[in-house]
Image 1: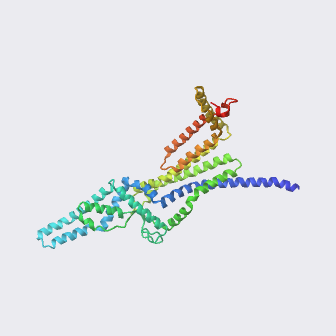
Image 2: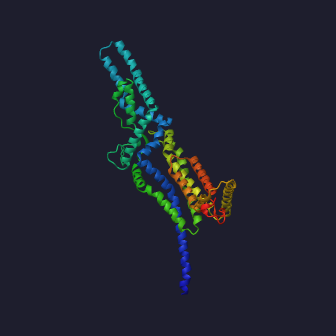
Image 3: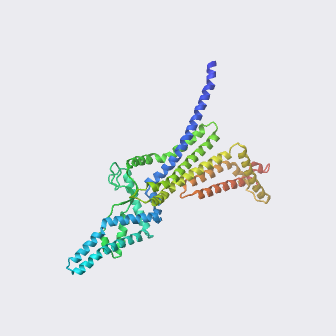
Length: 426
């Protein structure tokens, strides 16, 4: 019997130790999964939603660096397909075959190179005019739509995809030039440049990603699409489990919130560091470094917004839990806020302005309403897009103002005159 009694406290200590260890592990898992779930959620949207992809990369059409790259690649594609020098040589050879005098033939020979240069210059001028025009956004979005659909098919292993991804890839991932060249061809013909009718359909891509590691990308795509949507929920459950198993739940909640914010911030720092490295990694036959940096900025804008949201919510949650704690500083701050609200409420009542029965009822559910305000603010930060740090700051300020207004409007029990029913107060 004595042994049994002595074993019971020991078993309890082991159970508590195991519980605390499991709590810590769950919080670590939540912190690690936070940046992964952020990146996965963003990737799932960009990889599977054509409209979201076009909305992300559509504004690139207004970036000078990207326009320059598109102009250069389009001119090169047309030049390779049309062979201007061969066309002008055929034209002059046809004229000379008509039997022109030797001096005239010699003069025509002198015009061959200027004529070819003139044709090339005319094509280049129209290409630049089309790409820099306001109407080009429609062509650009059509190219993006086609590119995304083909990329999705490729990542899913569809054998009919234009961009094949595998051990022996046929092409690279990027923006297809077909729709752009077609628009340039139509503009040239409309301007009376009949030679443009000889420009064939072009299947060429402005390279923005190398497919040398495409097999790995395919595997990652499959994994992200399958698991990505579940990761945020798994991270949230892990964090909640870690807090519930902790002996000091308030301290565990603060630790979980700070850990999630810290790992989210680490992802943001990693993204910021990777941007200048793009110029070094730019492929010689793809976008130049400055254009790739612009593409990177547009591609990761949504990801940065998600990272900022998680960091803000993590820090705000830690502060909120701390403010609700038993420490001296939180008590002083809470007392100061209550005193300020009471002073405003007292000033109104002294001048005949009171919330009466409504304020008394509000006091009964004030705790629930505080959580509602905080949860709504967090939902706005997480779900509303686009959003930046300034927007988040205003949301936080608005939530604090609303909480203070609720504090002023409520009529705590000690504010209701003794013996007066709540329904008749005020």
